[in-house]
Length: 247
Length: 303
Image (tube, rainbow over all chains, first blue to last red; front, side, top):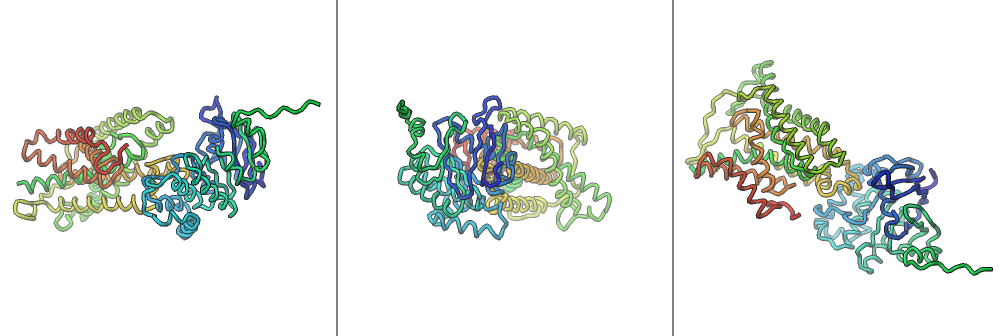
């Protein structure tokens, strides 16, 4: 357990079947205020890794700590109460509820006097959501849904925000908008773990990146370095790194 | 005559509607048709009868009729106790049966079959405890009040209508304007996301059982007050309950009540114009017609 870290995992083993874990012994830590992007090819176990941290995929071994608190066995709803928010890749809003009800639902776990204040502060970050509070969330566009999902997660003022591929299915213009918002949220002090296939855009706003391959943490480094790291090209494009010149 | 048939249908429809609300809530959140729900109506009626009889025996003035009604204060108190007891019975069935099957991620058909088993067990147990002889909340004879030419209703019937209207409004407000209502709607749409939004899904499911069972108890007491109490009363209502819930649209409380009213009114009109022997077929015809023509019901969302 890394007590200085905002969130850490030690030897995390997780997946859908005990005999066939997807995540196989991952040691990982994110420092307070950091934005870390989790990279890896399809099927590397990135989503399973963050879902296990959030409490919606079974953990078979190892531990998850939020600060110095062991939260491995807590159910998902208790994790968010402790400050760990998670935004799934798909189906991340309640489409039958209105925009305001989506935010209200997230605020319901807060003390009553804080609720309106937190909703107002999130609406200040996403002013478009405040314009049509009574609109059914199911009527929102892909980008707006993503904004609402992030807004809902921010309501509890989380210590750590985890996002699973927030750019999936969005146009480049909307992706840029979503990532600009995430960078701003991170600058406001929220620690962010971002699972992303859009490597270039993600590394552009991240401090650090880690690379998962077949459920194992294979590589990590500062975002600026990783952006030009041959291993990234190898993993995503199948381009082998240039062989070292023989002496 | 037709006005009277409509009044009778309205009264029967409110009873069906109250029962259907419980079915629609459990169906939308637990994702299976609970065929044991009818038994909660019977158990609710008998629980209220037991408590009110005990109270009336212990303190006779509680049995003195209130104003124009046929019952004393022992019955409203018995009803409240019955709502709690029936809720606890539903929770017990969930803990012993449905909850365990959910934990094993059992298929829907397993849950449905388990519901049939639970219904049979509860009905047989009730019949064993109270026998199949009909019982009554009161032996007092009520004179129907003339409301309009050709339209009469007893004060008990009018009270039942008012209580149903208030309960439907209360449940609707609970669902649309409170934190627990939002949680129930969220769990209904996506349990995993609800948990990620901070909703305690297991607690929400417990509240759904309590609420559905409490409304079933009210329906049972109303049916017992207006007709009679029998161990099979809930089972006999099962088809109209499901017809109402599906007609209204699964998950919709106002829809369930409207569905109940439509089923009740149609049954009453069938009795009036076709013959009493066709009454039971009405709910079946409505159920089949809705499933064929508009499976999402009046207020439901298309799948």
